[in-house]
Image (cartoon, rainbow, N blue to C red; front, side, top):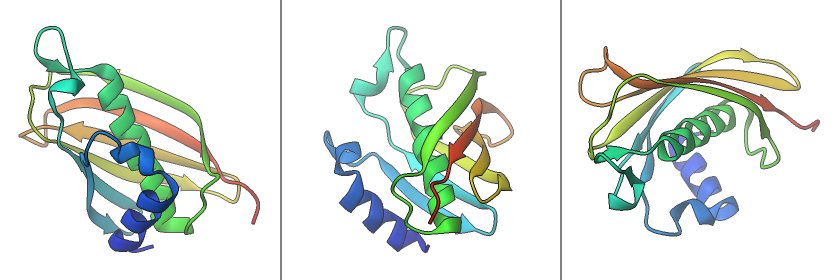
Length: 137
């Protein structure tokens, strides 16, 4: 799927991700990868003026799902079976970028590595491995 096709699919099948305003945007689709931008708002902060863990988890999960869509097509029922996240640095209220790399794309399972950065790409704020179950056609 193209960048526009993925956005259209998410808007149609998962309108709830934009319920409080559009904060996610796919910025790049490439072979075996995808990048998504997250523009956090005050509602995404936790005490200490840092972006909350659940907000970063959401970014990693939605970006991994979009990476799978980009490579297998519009499969609404692909579901997360596992997501292990490591929080590495304290991000401030500024855009985050989630770079996804498809590690395995099988008939029934996909494994995606996600690295979330803010500012300097060599200093990730979190990293996650997501495994998705892909339903039979």
